[in-house]
Length: 391
Image (cartoon, rainbow, N blue to C red; front, side, top):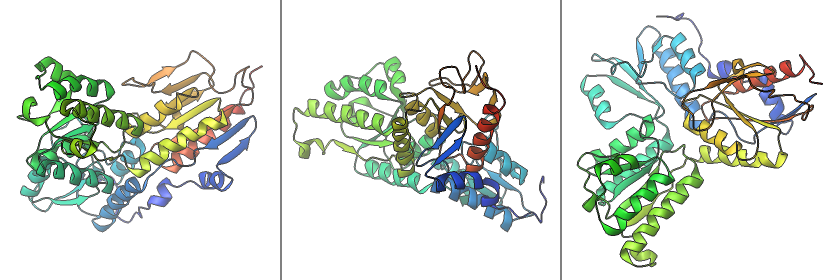
C-alpha cells in the first residue's frame, strides 16, 4: 500500500487555501499590478463533493491496513483522485473491468452514484459499501422512481455516458419504468413529432436522439413523460427542453389546460442548488467586463464545462485544470467549448497584450475544484504578469 499508516489525512490541510480565504475576505478581489483579479461570488468545492472526499478520507483513517477500492473516480478532478491514490485507495481506469471483490471488501461508491445492477453485484459478492453519493443525485433518483411507479417515462437531460446519468437511468428501469436520455435541445426537438403524432421514429433517428431503456416502445412509452436532469446541466437549457416537451404534449392533446397537460407531462427541476449558484455567479462576472475569464476544473467535469460555456458568451475564456496549464505568456493548455480533448494554444498572447496592459481577470472553478488549486492559479498569474511587460 502506497501510504504511511500513521499519516493524518486531513481534507482542510490538503485542499484549503489561505490565499483564497484572504481574497474572499477582500470582497473577492485582489489587486496585483498589472493584474486585477476577481473571484466569482460562488466557486469550487460544493457540499456534496467535500462530503464525498471527507467520507473517503475517513474510510482510510478508520481502515489503515485494509484495501479500499473506489468504483470509479470519486469526482472529476485529477488532483483529488491522485491524492486518493497516494493514500492507497485503488481507483480503476475506465478501460479496466469492474472491480472484483471478496466478502468483507470495502468499496467506496463515488459521488455520482452507481447503477443498480452494479450495486447489487457488489452486495451479492459480500462487499461493504461506503456510499458517498451526493444527496442531490439521490433526490433525482427518487423522482424518476416515482415517474416509473406512476407510469411516466423518464426523459433525462444529460450525458448518456456520465456516471450520474447512467445511475439515474438505472433507477427508472429498476422501478419498472422506461427512460430516454437527451443530450440537448436539438435532440428534444427531434422527439416532438413522435410525441404529437405517435409515429415511430426510425432506428437511425432514435439513435440520434439519445439512449433508451431496454424494451422502449415509442407508441406506448411517450404517452406520459416526466422530465428530470443530470444535476450538473445548464439550467437554461433544461428549461427550454422542458418547454419543448410540454408544448408537444399540449399539441397532441389539443389543449392549453395545465390540469390536462399535467396528466401526461411532469417536470421536476433537478439541477442542484450548488450547480445553479455557480452558474449564476459566472453570469454576474459579466458586469465586471473582464478581459479574460479563467475557469478551473477537470476537463471531464460536466459542471466545469458548462461554466466555461457561459463565460465564453461575454469574454475570452480559458478552461484549465490547474496552474501548470499556464505554461507562459503565449502558451496555455486549455479545453475549448465543444471539444473532447484539451489543446496547447500557442498562437497569441493571452494575459498581457498591447490592448490590455492592465487586464481584469475573472476566475471561477467547478464544483470539484479545491481552493488550493484556485490559489495556485492566482499565484501563477501573478508570477507570469511580473516576468514580462508587453510593450
